[in-house]
Length: 239
Ligand code: PXP
Image: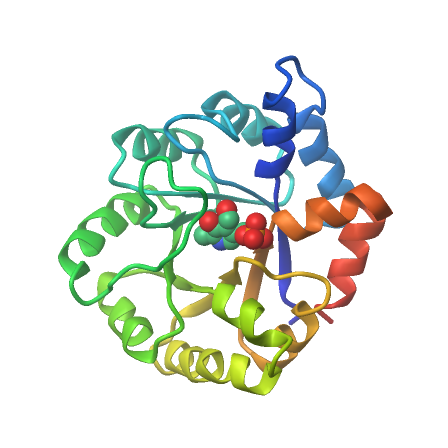
């Protein structure tokens, strides 16, 4: 099965917020991304609401026809309450700090196992699929299986950084981590810094890749190629 493309629309909210008002319209963008071929919409509401606002998440729920993926740190009660209210198809748990520019590390699934097990059970009992953000380290993936998560999302910044210098070297740890996911019957997602250049090699090297979520590079490309062309262009990298 082809890997699904979930479009992260946080950057559209960032542009809107920079001027006040409602231009660009985040809700319309979510509707259009789906129309243009996105298999899902991802949002990452942060407590300071500097990108996606909590109200956006509630509004998107009303128009979503594909998969809704909400990312965030469950140590924030407000985030847990929002996810349980909105009930997306998937919640992706990310251990980012307050005010952090963007996610920059995965969970330590060994040291934080107890905490993860408890919080994952909360989402799963509400019928929400859970994915947890992890570094591409086989031990972290294997230990994730004991937390009850359905999937792991491999943090791909290191791959994206290393891709130009040596793509074979850059992908190597991800192939090992992906195998650990198969061995432990975990679904596999990936995201962060994937772009139209590095995406095809990543997806074709990782056979069990269920979904990628892409924001920054896709929205930046949309300035040149338009949102519809860009989504199609990224989707073609996934077949
Ligand atoms: N996955 C997670 C957990 C993220 O935090 C982000 C950034 O919000 C992404 C994927 C998407 O990364 P990018 O914007 O670089 O495509």
